[in-house]
Length: 90
Image (cartoon, rainbow, N blue to C red; front, top):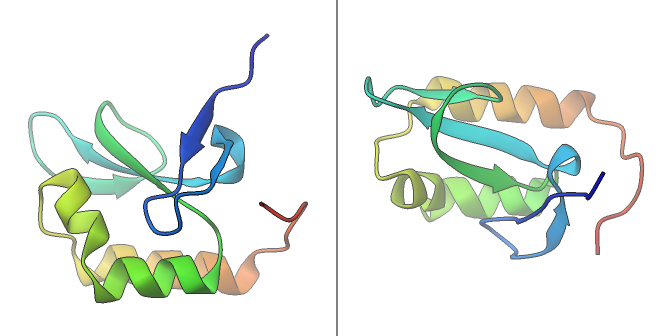
């Protein structure tokens, strides 16, 4: 089966969907959540630099066209602290 590639919203690197974190604005509630759901989504590299840039410049909020709660960023920082890189993204 063909691999689906997505760009990171911070650094723009293109990687397989499975290697990136997915943040979703669920339709029609406009609620933002991680990983699952149908609606507008954005992908983010599991790197400290990408997460910092996304939070400082509100890239997630602009991409999803919705306010991003602090709890989403806290969850992403927790995931980053537990993350063990399987392979380096280019």
